[in-house]
Image (cartoon, rainbow, N blue to C red; front, side, top):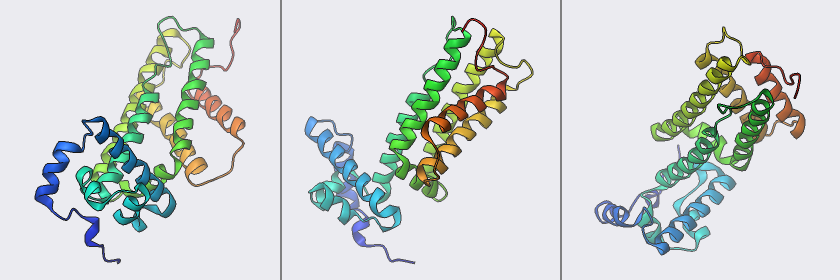
Length: 230
């Protein structure tokens, strides 16, 4: 087991904690820019060498700042990684919260919105593929990272559950469907497929994969891809 450098931790827990409480939220414009710079540098380092081999020294070198500046904003490598994962989770939740079904939706609207929703999720996943792979690894050992993962999935499942219930009321989804169970299974299908596709590099044709995911989604709930009048 590798010995962790003392630089992986704040050199002055008391003073550092006070500075972070004052500055880590980036209250000033300068503070926001510095924090964003550190996050971008950390992301670059994590994506290049992975979480285990990344060091605070690598992050500050990439950002062009001092160790003191780093510890003004983050307590450790662990904390800045968690901040990155929190950002990605927020982005995923944002695309998940867009409603797939409106009160006046037609069948065509539903299919179009579903394709757009799956596409938006896949776009965010692809952009963050390297971090998503590290997220899978760290979630098994870091309770805070696991919390972000669970919250993002819960938002995904809840959004699908609500949409399926509306679709049942409209008569375009199977009446015998347990919406929450189906939502959890469908969310797992899309997210797990994205993990193997984008994070692990399993090759698929872009258009065919996206179309197939949506077709499987529709088939599972008994909603035809097209309907008379579409």
